[in-house]
Length: 122
Image 1 (spheres, helix red, strand yellow):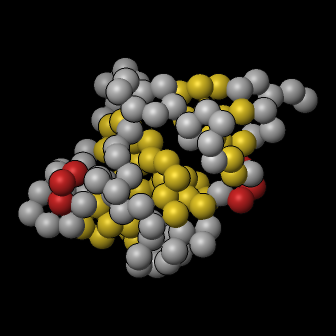
Image 2: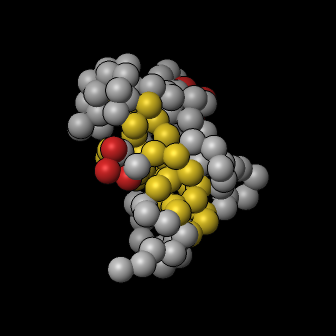
């Protein structure tokens, strides 16, 4: 079985590369993590326009690092637009509460979206 690298390049942001052997490389040649050592967890966004919101993220543990976040609108519009929120600005960079992720007030209302979080275990 072979594996071809794929590059996901959002406009105005860093690349997310899934390379040979299933490794994730956030900035070509930088940090590499074995895919088997990652957690892939999904959650719906929340409305954090008035304050930070704790979003249920079952399986997240205190100290897990958020490596990547990829979002998609819940509505089936026939088009596929992927959202790449900023770690640290829209969502916390390190899990601070078990089974939760803090969505920052700066993110606003993300309740129309579902997100896939890539976490590196503590």
